[in-house]
Length: 463
Ligand SMILES: Cc1cc2nc3c(=O)[nH]c(=O)nc-3n(C[C@H](O)[C@H](O)[C@H](O)COP(=O)(O)OP(=O)(O)OC[C@H]3O[C@@H](n4cnc5c(N)ncnc54)[C@H](O)[C@@H]3O)c2cc1C
Ligand SMILES: NC(=O)c1ccc[n+]([C@@H]2O[C@H](COP(=O)([O-])OP(=O)(O)OC[C@H]3O[C@@H](n4cnc5c(N)ncnc54)[C@H](O)[C@@H]3O)[C@@H](O)[C@H]2O)c1
Image (cartoon, rainbow, N blue to C red):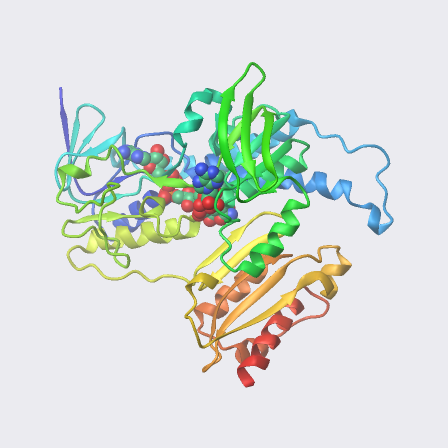
């Protein structure tokens, strides 16, 4: 027997964006229904940001323990890694973070929550599960994204894994081939390598951690390829399931390779969760991949009161952007038809490798063809970085020649997560290089490296 529900705003997906949208709709005094087809807890807490950082933290502990000798400090005897204990901490701390999300879900009145997979049967009408029809005045789609699994790996069954599977392990495997040297591939690949897993990371089109500045990318390549086999232009020619794991053949500049791994970790990108949503039953304009046309400022789909928030819109698939998207979509859904562009922050991304990678504002590839100066610092001789033996990396800052306005930066190097925050705040304030140089710099700190890059840019602006 079918059930009918009526609400002002239906929100599909109780992830970071969906929960933020729900809060915004309720704050505006409208009714909202939060529909979730999978487990509660969010991608970030369950299988994304948090468990990956927990694995990285264990890897950093192992790495530090193995690299004390240059300081004259010796850990006599081998560093022993207990894979069970590593994964136990990753999972129990992860569960703690998920628990906080579940608490906030439980604080949402039961009548505002609807479990089940949702699909459109009209512009703002949804079928949830097999029998519940939801009539909404507006809808927010916040269904997230899923890891892409290229066809050639499907035959490997449970030996072809994605990030979710790593965080379900009870112990560490012996070997993993990581396909995709993007953010996920590098974060997890390096962490596993430092935890004693034999790791190879393969890319196919030269990309590395999303870095677009060739000088920064080269510097990053030197750092990572010194730690584990890393090839950015490889072609995997065959993969075959064996009793022991996976038999892999790939080709790179050095020739053909035949190797055996326990698992192939696929980290070749993520795809918006749009398929199966039934958008063809609405008036949304869909492209050839089924993506609806939408306004990037208001997040509204062209022509219908439906909004697209978080990873599913593929604008900036990052946690803080998903939360902002959810707020903007929720506010606009509530205010519809009086929608307005949401306020955005300066772009900032951080990759939690060692050395870390970050970008702020405009990326190198987005810079105008002329009228830009680039200041840089190589961290090899940077004082505090050298003191701590963290002296590898390159920071490049971009500024408008005419006005001196700071435009953006790309970096691989020490404390990039912190330098990235300083720079993104300056970017959002619209500061010039000279205003940034007027700010305090303590001694001796890694931020003095940033000052060197800013001075380099200032010299060129003044010339
Ligand atoms: C390994 C990894 C590490 C990451 N690390 C970081 C990091 O360090 N920093 C950072 O900023 N970002 C990181 N991210 C990205 C970040 O996790 C995402 O940007 C963010 O979680 C996206 O939130 P969301 O709300 O869009 O999607 P989600 O949290 O995935 O929520 C979508 C929800 O929609 C539900 N759903 C889907 N379809 C339907 C349907 N038809 N009906 C009902 N429900 C549906 C799903 O079950 C899911 O619960 C990482 C991602 C991964 C995978
Ligand atoms: N620290 C963070 O903020 C963080 C961490 C993890 C994930 N994320 C988010 O998750 C998103 C997805 O991450 P991702 O690493 O899956 O995607 P990605 O787009 O960052 O990287 C995918 C990489 O795989 C390569 N690739 C594509 N097809 C390939 C193939 N067939 N063989 C070999 N290489 C191939 C691409 O060239 C690219 O280098 C990121 O863009 C980011 O927004 C963020």
